[in-house]
Image 1 (tube, rainbow, N blue to C red):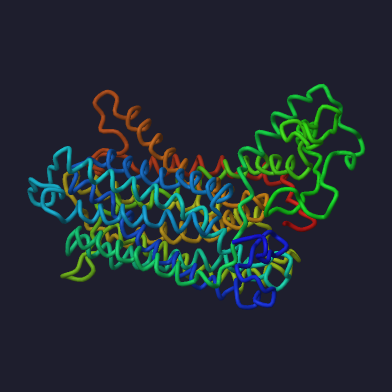
Image 2 (cartoon, one colour; image 1 turned 90 degrees about the horizontal axis):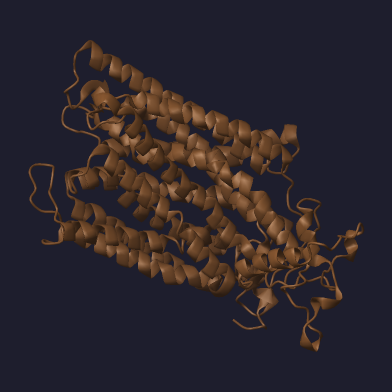
Length: 570
């Protein structure tokens, strides 16, 4: 691209140089390829990750707690690496090229994972029935592949939703409305892929073999790459704004250098570019806010602010927009932190829900058994049901009462999801109480499965899915809208780190709970034989943490002020 490219007012660049071609690019024309890419990529990710805890137990010979912790550690890493991809996208490469580079790392990791489960010498050996005893080399290859995937997804997760939203011009009212719907359908496409993963692919893994079970997701990832590049001629590309971390540190340094400087009462005296455009590439000007006033000192002009040639020294003087960028990030942090406990609840679907399901009767008729990991399809079905219902019915209905164009504010939407997640954990805990009562009354402590249908788990999966539609989609939209224009990938990555920290928090909770509850020779809450444990206590612990988190969230959301942008980007 060059300077002759055509830019929309929010900093989006149309790769076709003729303004008349705007109708031929962006909008849903481009987004269909992005949604197709996301559907196939998520099919690959969930096809490999949904049943991972069972692979670790059966093929790598790991216990319940160890396998659960390895899954949450890896899943957490998948949501930390987006910080790397986001920084590269916002600072240097742009979202398109970041995705284009990292998909090849992703495919390489998926290919190695498939080889580690299918090629003699690489796949775990010394198998006795359903349990194998791999050597250290085989285990190492598996985890190298797993963490290559974590790195690859780090360039895709923070960019693809923002890249899709970039296809809609925020200063075009018709496109702005479509952008709000895009986030709903983006999450819908994620769950179409997850539905196929939780049904077809989990069945293949449990009944055909892990080589095919990992091979099919690898092929899906290759198809995802094809979808992405097929849409290249329709995309509008965002101009990288330079290092966001540099701009943040410039404000901090400039503010501390002027600690003794008094901020003028008239905020119009603070430094800002004279024309309508921001001096940050791809960003509109931000309106001054009255919070975090200490950082306003960075925009107070003084005689020492210039360097040779009359140019402003950016480490001594920053524009109001640059200062407001930092303020925006800081004010997002409390909302961000409130999502960590929700992500901990969400992570139980791939760990404790699966382990609980392993102890229940998995039969569907006399000849077919449904893998416990496949129950996550009901989470997906719930998302697929509630996403269009929310978009087409709940929003118009709520709009009549709230008079808000989106029905609920983004913070209200997220809060509703937090409440629903509390009931999901209570429901899981109640089921475990009933299961343990049966075990106790029938002295079935050593039975691998008890005659209670696995389908009693359906309500907890449905509630998690409903909570996702409110909280996770609300987060996607909130962090895109409230992020400074030139930091949108970084803020999308920031929202994803709640999932990472939620997984890590789950690991910490499991570790601490087992250490505390195994004292004096007791089996602990989550032993390898769950019939002798108290998984219900763990679910109730999460419900309590979720309730306390919601109370804090209410306090945070009441004090949050939404961002205001003016002018145009360049």
